[in-house]
Length: 252
Length: 295
Image 1 (cartoon, helix red, strand yellow):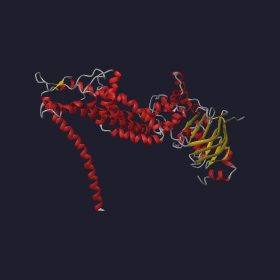
Image 2: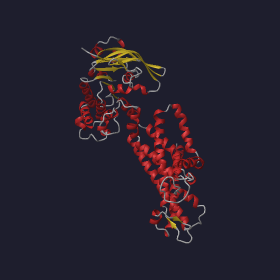
Image 3: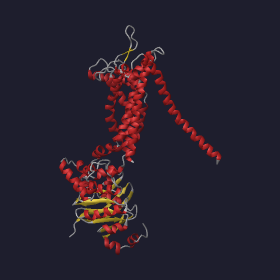
Image 4: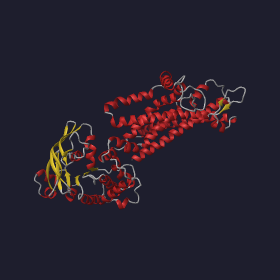
């Protein structure tokens, strides 16, 4: 039996007058990886950033409709944005550790959320780094600046940082697009591991990657949700011609 | 081809000369200061000059004394007092402008801050006499308000534009990705500012404050008008003081040429030059480091 974790209904999104998401409705399944694919500018990143209300920071951005997480519309007026972002973690396209030590990077989310207990923070940092499969590489240099790590390590550190606050959902915006194949593989293996505990939504430009790692695939184009199904079906017998054209690389 | 290449070289040379000229002027000033200051030390011991608090070059019946320590301490006290006032205000204003203010407010505020930087120091000094002074006198029940605190307040006003605009630049240069990462972890705007943006911009902010300090140390007319001008070792901020710059400005016009007193005033100028040069150098090095870190 599969549980729906996020229920999106008639969701529209505007930057000023331009509408970038049109009537999106979709149910996202718990403890699965949902991949979002589509050509550049199709609104897939905007959709991802709507789920933790990161778009709030953009001037002139406006949302309409519902994104319901655990029975609560996150766009209701009395919702605390900070609360949502604790529940919905995010990993960005370009790894963006803070110019702080490795330890402080992972501990940051706990500290801003008012955790004071030193031992608890230490435990969480270690656990998060282990879960992000980077503990063995950094355990001897937790007090070194995070910028000393390689690109792939920095990205896994950012994943650890997101895990530290114990979110339920993790949004990933092309997390491997700036990495080499080896580092990409590590991130992909990590995602398979993480879905046991978290609901993961990943935007990717890379069709093979979507096919490899996601259980469900969503195809976006020009701000509309064209097709949504089990990954296998999307990639073998899509219902719509345009999905097939995109997947087979006829446009991109 | 030959012609345009020649022209290119000419322009190149012209700009090189311009650059060279600036360096020459700086070196020239330094040499002049040293040349004019050195003769003073035929009669004054350097130790006494730097570490004695007695400045009485026009003594007639006793031997004249040339100790600049009390002026040096006054300059530092007034400048550091100014920074204590200006730094929190400056960082606050810069953070407001870079993070909170709407673009409308920013468009108005930025030129206003630049105008503030352009107000002649004599006008600020005037405000010190007619406005700040009486207020200080009233609050602390003093006969007059011309003292170190008055000087600090005015210098803070003068250092603010530098501190605000450079701090704002430093905050602006912090990559947006840091801010997003912080917000995505459930941090508030305030936490993001204090825990991520200000630390990331720290070297730029420090440089901004150093440059503000450089300005305060070298400022003359304002402190001359507002601090009461009495040479004494300052014991608190409510006492009248006289800074190094004021002493030079007051005494150089009346001193007989090529006397020890005359040379000693150049000696003060040399000390000031070295202080401001050092402060600016440090600021520059720190600022450079800041830009490197963010790359």
